[in-house]
Amino acid sequence: MLLCNSMEKILERYERYAYEERQLAATDFDSQGNWTLEYNRLKARVELLQRNHRNYLGEDLDSMSLKELQNLEQQIDTALKHIRARKNHLMSQSISELQRKIKEKEKKDKAVAQPALWDDQQNQGPHASSFLLSQPAGLPLPCLNIGGCYQEEADPGVRRNELDHALEPTYSFHLGGYGA
Image: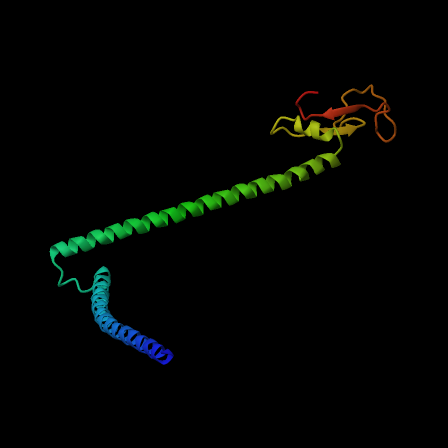
């Protein structure tokens, strides 16, 4: 009995494997036919794409009808519109990026120039900045002459020492004709 059971199991397995093998062989035959069809379909598609490519390059146009030429022209026009749109988009991005960089550089230059101006004003003393900034634009800056002006004194009654300096020092601003 044990031997009989064992033999039956072996035969069942053999039949099952034989059946599966026949199924695989049939599938291979079908798939081989499918692959042949798929190959022919893909080959025709490649030939069509190659012909279209030649047509886009302006080659092999003699065999095309008027309607096919008009269709080709429309396709090329549409492609050109997409190309121009993309080019304009990239140019716009480049311009925006350049403007952003310029603004950043201007901010950086102002930030660098501001402390330098502040340092210059501090080195000139506490009153220099307010004095220099209060002058109207375009007017010459006043000069400070201690001991009089360089011009000849018109008053002969002013006493002078031997170095030709006034004995009483006067402090005046020479404003170059803009009033004192």
